[in-house]
Image 1 (cartoon, rainbow, N blue to C red):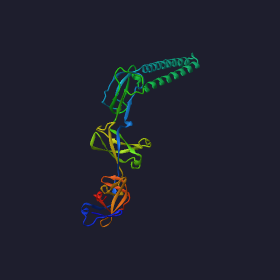
Image 2 (tube, rainbow, N blue to C red):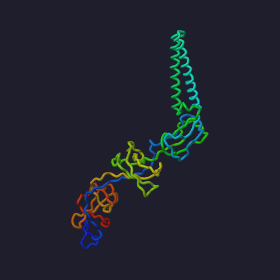
Image 3 (tube, rainbow, N blue to C red):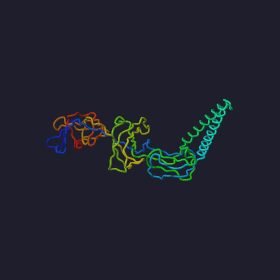
Image 4 (cartoon, helix red, strand yellow):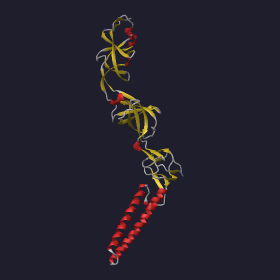
Length: 336
C-alpha cells in the first residue's frame, strides 16, 4: 500500500490510501485564542453590608424579615442599651448645666451693670458657661455617633440599612442581648451586580487583561451565557495551585446569579495571525506530535511539530511546518 524510505512514505498510484487520505495547504489565519478557567460567584464587597450592633444592648423590635428587600436608610431594628441610657442622661445633664450656667452669667452681668458684682465673677460665669457649652456639644456628638437623634430621647436606638438590597443572612431574634459588636445581626447584599472570581493558571496570566470582555456559564444555567468585564487581575499566586484570582463584574438585575454558584469563565484574546492546522492532522507517538507533509506529489514526510493552543478544530503550530506546505489532514493515522 505504501513504500517507506526512512522518514518518507510514498503512496503509489494504485494504493487505495489515495482515496482515503485528504491533503490541504496550511496557511496563517486570523484566530482568536480563548482560555477557560473555573470560577465562583461572589457578592461585590462594596455592595455588601454586615449589620452589627453599634453598642451592647437588647433587641426590642425587629422591623424586617429574612429575604426582604430594603432601601437605604430603612429601619431594621430597635436596640435598647444601658450605654444609650447613660449617653442620654449625660446629654440631659449637660443641657441642664448649660441652662443653669447661662442664667448665672446673665445674673452676674446684671449685677456688674448695676455696679454690684465684681468683674472677676462675670469672667468666672463666662468660663463656666463656655465649659458647659463644650460639654453639651460633646454629649450631643456622642448621641449622634450612637445613631440617636437628640430630639428623640427616651426611645430605643433605631438601626438603619446603609444600602439598598436584600437581606441574605439573618441571625437575630427579638429580646436577645448582644454584647459582641463584631457579630453580624444580619447581612444585606445588593446583588444587581456581582463578581465572578476565576482561578487562572500562572502560565496563562499574559492572556488576561483588565478591561477585556469575558463570558461565563454556570452549572445552574448550562444553556445560558453571561457577558462581563474584567475588573481586577490578582498580584498573588497561590503556591499550591500556581493560580491567581481574576475578578469579572457581571450585571445581575434579575438576581439569578447568587454568591457561591460555580461556573466557568472564558477569556478571548484579540484576533491575531497564526499558523494553524486541523487538529485531525496531528498524529501522537508517545509524548511527541507529528504531521505528514507532502514534499513531492504523494511523497509524504513525517515531521515532528511543536503544537500550541487548540482553537475550536484547529491547533496552532509553533514550529515544524511552514505556511504554504501541504499536509495530510484526514486519516493520517493510517500512515503510521
